[in-house]
Structures are given as C-alpha cells and as structure tokens.
Length: 277
Image 1: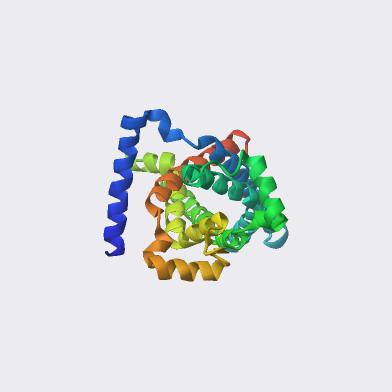
Image 2 (image 1 turned 60 degrees about the vertical axis):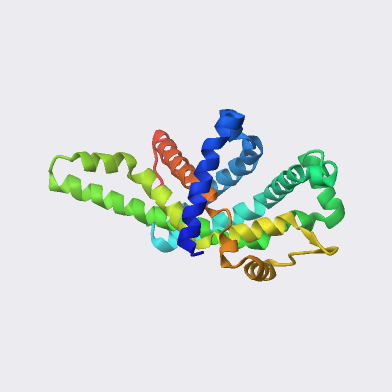
C-alpha cells in the first residue's frame, strides 16, 4: 500500500472513530485522559514559550544589534526545545507508562502502578534516576520539530507583517480577503508551520514513545537505543511503521498549535508588547 493511500485510509478510519465515540460513549468520552495530558502539556508549553521569548530577546539584543533574524529564531528555538525536553521528560515517561499500564491491566491481572507517584518511585528503584530520562535522546531529536515550527512561524509572520505594510503604503481600502488575512493569518501560519514540521519529523515521535514504554522481549528490553529502535521498527513494520498514528496526531497538534500561538500573541498584545523585538 502506498503512503498516500495509507494516509487517506487512516484519515477515514480516524473520522469514523471520532464520530462513533459520542454515539457509543457520549461526548464526554472525547475528553478522556485530558487531565493527565494537561499535566504534561501545560508545563512543557510554559517552559518552551518562556525560554524561546527570553532567548530570542537576549540573542537579538547582545549578538545581533537588537534585530531579529532567522538565525536568532533558530538558536532560540533550539535552546527552548532542549530545555523543555530535559525538564519535562520524566513527566511524559510517567504519563506514557501509566497509560500503557491501564491498557494492559486485564492481561496483566491488575495494575502495576497505583498512581503517578508510585510509577515514579518504582521507576527510580528499578532503573535509577536515569530511568526517568529514557527516551531523552529521542526527545532531543524532537527539538528539530519545535525548532522548525518556530522558524517557519516567525518567517510566515514576517511575511504577513510585510504584506500589511505594503497594503497600508498603497493607500487602498482593504478588501474582504485582506481583512480575512489580518484576522486569521497568524493562526493559519501557526497551524501550517506545525503541520509541515510534524510531517517532516514525525518518526522521532514513534521512536520516543517506544523507548519510553520499554517493552520486554524474551526477558530483555526490545529497544536498547535510538538508532536500534529506528532500525528495528523499520525492519519489522516497514517505513510506514515510523508514521503509525500520524493522522490522529495531526488532527490533535495542528489545531492545538493554531490556538496556542494565537492565544500567545493575543496575550502579548494585551500586555502591551509583541513577539517582535
């Protein structure tokens, strides 16, 4: 099956499930797992935005004559990604293991972990502090996604700003299309940047999740490292295996990015500043 046909099939299946859940379980079922997800997302996004904004300001002020540029965005985004990944890896590891433990409870004859704290303590006892950082290398690989997203977003936002300046300089009355771009351009740029970045870097998400789950095979850990995990998934499942779950992932992260960046820019405007230096 080609990649395109597989993607279309996944889209159809995803929407079928999306419409089936409210009919069988009610609309509240669409928000199952929201609490644990927020525990990981909120600190991760707060750290990322804070580090990126301050990193961009420091780099532009002290190393680029107070001006922003693509390399400033690149370095600030990479720094923010590394800091975020390091700070939040234990949270995501515990969340992933709790989710797997819940899904496998029947097969295992009961839950292995009582709660997040118990999962954390068991991980430390059995694997040491380093156990909380399994998958960190793959998380660092994921820095490429957040970096690409920030750089693409900043460049598209710059293009929108230049377009607005040309419109104002022309003196003509804004058309309906011009007004639409003014209102939705930033949100659209954020969503599109996330879409492109995710498509290009998604395999790291699959590998990172597999490493965090740490499955056993014949009494040994199935995945022993980043490169080995990549090779084994590609060998056992084909290259499409590295894109497993891409469709629902896109349906979740693209709207999320559009809303998040739109809220970020709105908050900055309310505070009397912008994300531009």
